[in-house]
Image: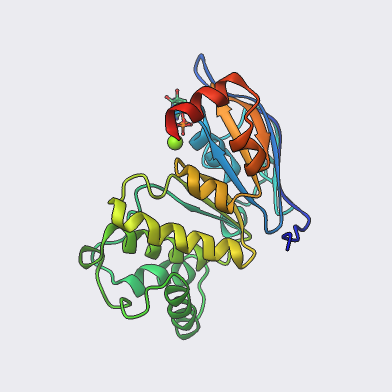
Amino acid sequence: MAKQLGDLQVVVDNVCKSFGSNTVLKNISLSVRHSEVVCIIGPSGSGKSTLLRCVNALIPIDSGTIKVAGIEVNDPKLDELALRRNVGMVFQSYNLFPHKTALENVMMAPIHVLKQDKAKVEALALSLLKRVRLSGKEHHYPGQLSGGQQQRVAIARSLAMSPQVMMFDEVTAALDPETVKEVLVTIRDLADEGMTCILVTHEMGFAREVADSIHFTDQGRIVESGHPKEFFSNPKDPRTQEFLRQVL
Ligand code: ADP
Ligand code: MG
């Protein structure tokens, strides 16, 4: 059965971004609907991480517009907290607090940033750890967990802010091969539950399986977009063809 996609949740329109004389994003436009899983793939240095960072206002854009869950990201009066509550971001390096347990790591932001009630937050955190398949590990410290387990704690930590959109930036790139799969399964679970996801990944098989649409970036531009089936079986742009030849 085809997945039902909802309203537009993220709209990136004609965005440009330079660092000094290095133009990293060149007229980037893309949109993401509620429950859609969008994968961004492309060579290293093509601007993928920069794009994600612009979407949650970690870095400012030079021109164009970005709208997330109704919030205008480039509005000078932007409420950054409101934006970051709506957009969860998980990076390659999970950076958990080493002296806090898995449960405490997940509870931190709702208690300290959102000032929510501790008992309520604990119940939420326990359910999130279950959702990322870490029941039984609640009281483990990061050093007692595998890389894949730590990354799933990081995902639960992001989910604790009840985001509308989750962004994943090469979250399995630093993991041992045997723990990559468990993190991908967690992301697939979220996607299946209808979470809107923007995913930068080098896991082509996974992108093909979970994505509703794929964007291929090269040198700061989206050079090809499409449905995964079409994208992988019949890439049109020579740069996409070359990239896929190298990675598949
Ligand atoms: P990708 O994630 O696709 O590998 P990035 O978005 O990390 O690409 O980087 C795109 C380009 O922007 C690279 O040339 C990188 O050196 C440059 N870049 C990224 N972040 C910064 C920064 N904070 N300051 C200066 N240059 C940056
Ligand atoms: Mg990157």
